[in-house]
Image (cartoon, rainbow, N blue to C red; front, side, top):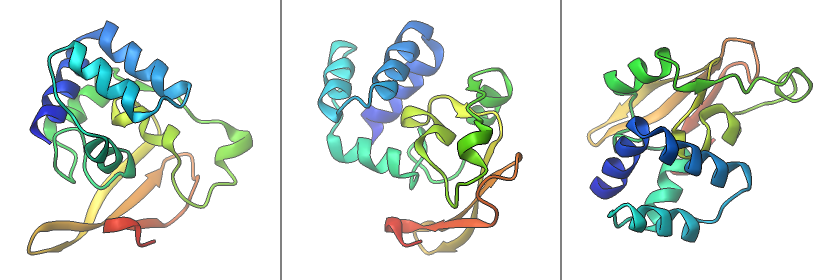
Length: 145
C-alpha cells in the first residue's frame, strides 16, 4: 500500500499525472493500465491495492479515514462537481463518481466519515451527499452493506 500511497501523492501534486489517471477512470480503465502508468512513474502497485482503494475501504493515504491533507486538497480545488440531478437523486448508495477514479478528485458534494471502529481501525463509514443523494447510506468493511 505504501507504493500506491506514494503514487497517488505524486498524482495529487502533478496535474498531468492526475489527468491521466482521471482519463483512465472515465474510460473504465482496467487495473493493468493503472499498474503500467504507475510503473512508468517508478512505482510498483498491485491490482488488489487498486481494488481496495476503489472499494472505499481505504483512502489514498492507505488509511480508512480522510487525512488532513486530503481535506485540504478537496477544499483547495482538487475536486469536481460530479452531481447529476437525473441520476444522483435516484441513488441509494455511492457510485464511483462520488470519489472519482481512485479517489483523486472527489465530488464537491460528497463527504465520508468513519462511524464504527474495531481493534484494527474503522469498519463502517457514513456517506453523505450534500445534495441529498443516497440519504443515510452506510458501508461496512469488506463490502457488507
